[in-house]
Image (tube, one colour):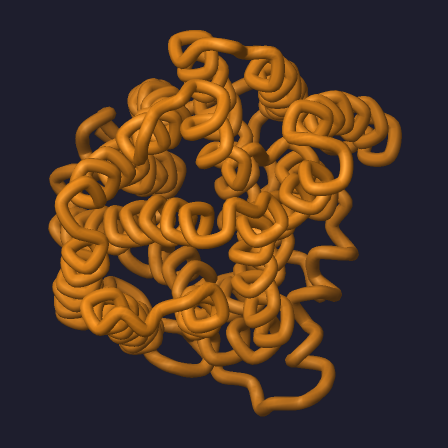
Length: 416
């Protein structure tokens, strides 16, 4: 079997990838558990949709302010060490929350400060993780590795909220302590990696190199269009900040109900990540991506109208499946279309737009729910996502017409 036509399970036989995958599973598991615990704890303390939105905002601040630094760090230093250190800091933040819960001194402001520390570490983690993967697997396996790597996050997003929700019924401190342990084990796994390749050159730090990632993206309409589409779709269509309100006030459940809602979205995403890992998309990548985002927006509207847990869980599962299709297409285009020595900076810009869209989406939905109510906030978001799809087709016709996602590989050969 050639590298260009690998068997569907070949990536799982690649030792360094499996080690990378396990580290990401543990890190993502801890992230999902703490997300459930923090959002439930905040809502119990304040009962405020706006405060739920603030959790997203304080995570956005370091992601935005550290963007240029993160990209350069990922391109100039050992990516596995950068990733491992960020995971250790995440673990320390969870340890602080565990001690604060046991000591009884946690309040809203203290939680937000720790979340700010956590967000600062995450700012380094995601772009470095994305730019490390192409150094671990051969180019012919990258598309499948991206789908399989994304599946690790979805597995964690299913299991993590469930574990976190049920552990919350026992002890909040136990959730945070478990998260701290998982982050430390994930860090140990990643620092023991032996990548097959390394960054070929390290340019001196100048204003040009600092902004090279931004310049690269803005000169590639296909990549810019994919990032912009996802950014505005998630900012508008995200309902995650509203889940504690739906679980507690609409469906009248506890933290276990919140866990099931979060797990449903991940279940849909996991199902499609398995499909994409086995059968990578060969044709009509652009039209499929736009269709997936439109389905995401429609499912958001359905969630807004839901009055029962089964309907809400179905809507969340559809949202997760549609989002996974969009993510795999976008990530494959970015990684294949970016030179290795620039992947850290490009991944940092990508993560600023994509990663922070979740936090900005949480803040957007929280503010709008405080102003207009929970249902209008969700409905406006879903309809806004559909409008973004229509506008993006007009603004980025190159993306709408792209056929084979691997056609963007030639972008990596063009000068920035």
